[in-house]
Length: 116
Length: 116
Image (cartoon, rainbow over all chains, first blue to last red; front, side, top):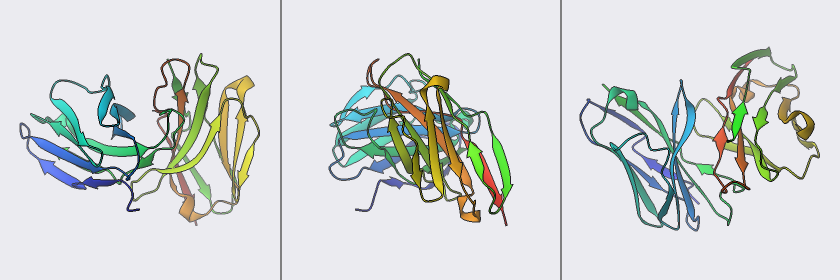
């Protein structure tokens, strides 16, 4: 298996632009997570899905952020409009099992976003 | 609420030294899982170990060992005879299953530098 695949690996954009990050989870995994990593706040859970359905989006910072999972093999995290404080590394992870807390997460390589 | 504290922000050791990374957790749940992940300079997060709250046996895997002590709410990680390839950021994480089966909450990480 190719693992969790994220794109783009690096994105540099200007404030106000729309940013779309993409994730392909491991085939057969039924949970998908989006995390954000910054120096100040560490790794924060933004949202997670189970069988393509959003379960908890309480970590999404504000309405500028949205995430979708139209099918089992694809998810997007969109920021519109982007702001400099959104600069971070965004990780997608997937797992398999009945209890998301007990499952081992497999992470993608991350998407490093820089908003100027 | 769940919380993970990794008090050591950065540690620097000389190759072949032993090093222990501390992790203290907080939860009111009786059923929970603890994890360690490694983030090498390449950026991806790699799973190292998972422990559930009912299994306090220490674990050894090659040069790595983990000491789980419920009495002190700690799950410390020791690398014996450290090597340069061990240089990475190490994250301790917790998920508690009684209160809603929440996904992982990560500590802020400890950056380990092993100098040749």
